[in-house]
Image (cartoon, rainbow, N blue to C red; front, side, top):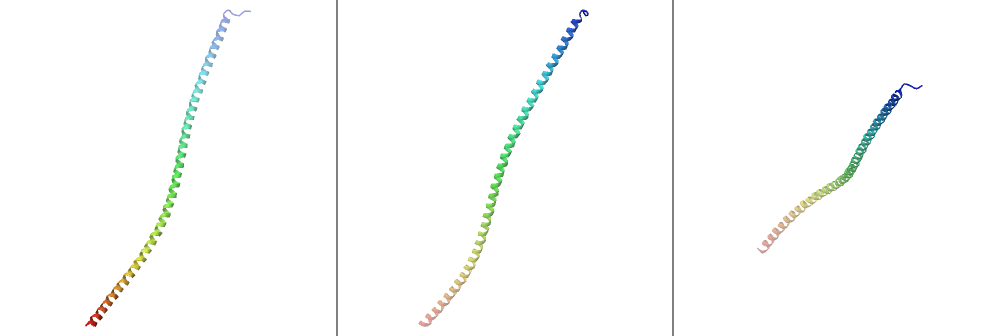
Length: 137
């Protein structure tokens, strides 16, 4: 029982066609997987680059924040020193005003005493002149 002549050739042709189709499908699948791996790798490296840039920016912002904190602390200390200095200078000013007021009062008193002594001297000189002019006359 042999089959129909030529049937074996048709079977062989069908098997070859199926094998070629499977080979082409495998090739397409391999190409698709390669493309996906390439795209994923590219996306992943771009993502890593973006993460690196973001980390770098974060580091720079952290440094800037720390510098601003240090600057703020220094300015706060300077402000406190200026307040202390201002308070001391205000007290000193008030003391100088009090001293000036006291010295002005003392000057006025000395001026009155000087005027009184000058008047007394003038009176004594007149009396002396009057006595000498009466004594010689």
